Length: 219
Picture 1 (cartoon, helix red, strand yellow):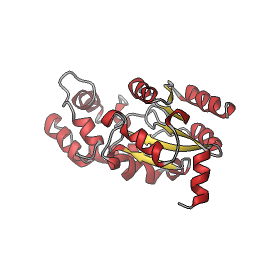
Picture 2 (cartoon, one colour):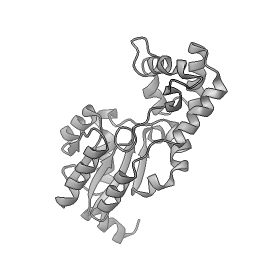
Picture 3 (cartoon, helix red, strand yellow):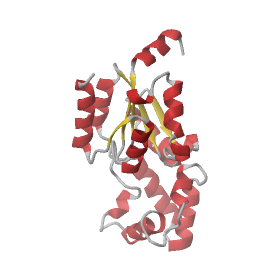
Picture 4 (cartoon, one colour):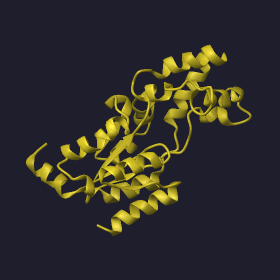
């Protein structure tokens, strides 16, 4: 990075934006959530096995997001526990990851800020994000200055007390009190505020756009 480019970054504030729950709202295996889908009967058992059930495999989702599991391995775990057809389910999963509902209006609002803000897409996500979602939707990465995923970083947002944020802000020669996080996780927002930054915890596209507009008008 040239000195001129670095100086431009120093002048900018840093905006961190989450992906799922902020820019995209679809769940994994969204297709089989429809009641008329042939594999619909597996949707809730998968959710309960991985995400929400009292008997879910604890720690698996975090380990997946940290790069300790691939999507193939997770599907094998699903097959072993639920008897779902591996290849059919995996193929659906990949296509759903490629067709996630990515908000164009939100991306347009982010791009409008980039003259004054250094915008970073920061997602706690699986291998799916860089393998399937980004290649199928290149305009997503183009809306940001940088894209960071926990799967490649081997680091969650909450890891080591939010070390990712302090390290990234330092590398950009900025200060945390000049930085903003937009994330649908209240715990992530509280952590960011504890570090000294400002956070928005919106619910839905309208609230996200409102938060971005608030940043634009306060520049």
